Image 1: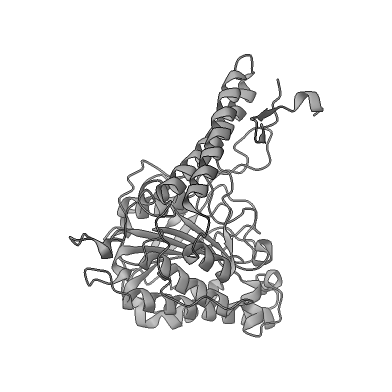
Image 2 (image 1 turned 120 degrees about the horizontal axis):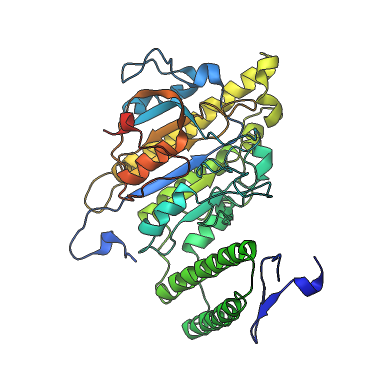
Length: 429
């Protein structure tokens, strides 16, 4: 592509590159005078490299509530009546055994766009954020482990979230960065903040006007790319409107201390879980994703086997198998601690935070490079799903059926999501 065919839109203050073309609040309910029902929240916790198939899944011959808790979920025994494991789910288009979260919440076909080797679509959290995020400071919050994502088997992406155009959404790396995003005060004078936002709006207005003028004479493929570009501009406008809405509104007081720098592995996940609760406590956001670390988790609990090698335990049922099981137990222990705190945290009306949260925990990878029977554990009372069960869905049921069921349960009544075929009726309480 030569410089003469690469176009730019510019205003007096900025230059924004066009895509390459072929032709050319809600305020905290706790402070309301009249108490209102606590809002619904949605949380996705994703990990890479899967689980130990033999000891994480309940026996498929024991569907329903009367099932034996498998070894890998043993730390969750006190909460057995408050979570459900769903078996038989998959993203039918998944074909990359190193991507634990890239398509986990989207169900997209990476080859859906002719001539492209990668395509994604909107993730379930962002579908929810479009409705649940209208009245909070942050429409959604994306959290990442403080390590390279691919080292933990997550695959491409800036977080687990993808926008309506299937473009990656950035996330906050590690507890300290997430804490400051949530609770650190912006010391910039309000008038200066307003001026900065006005300048950004002026740039966008100029860019949009010039882009529209370029539409004439473009081929079909170029128009499609330009439409995608317009959507990106609209997304920026939405974020600017959110920033304008919250100018002058002080950040909430942090209900937890600032995390120590350098936390990794098990301690990082523990603090991140505390931050997730703090974000919901202060009604800073109602939609969260956390792309969890696996590599540093293993190091922090003394496992020396490489994460990717561990996922190939089938070939050597010794050290790798033991490492995989130890990883499962630690992750289950951490999840049990999060559920403990969700139950202990009270809402303004005296109910438990747990009762208003829909939580999904899992991965697109089962084990090794297997992408069938995605490990899926659901908890929380926010989506009205059946808890305390081992649900065995028909083989290759779309994972997105589960996301669609959860979205409906929290009041986001979209017709479908990703490759969903219907809600998962067995999951509805």
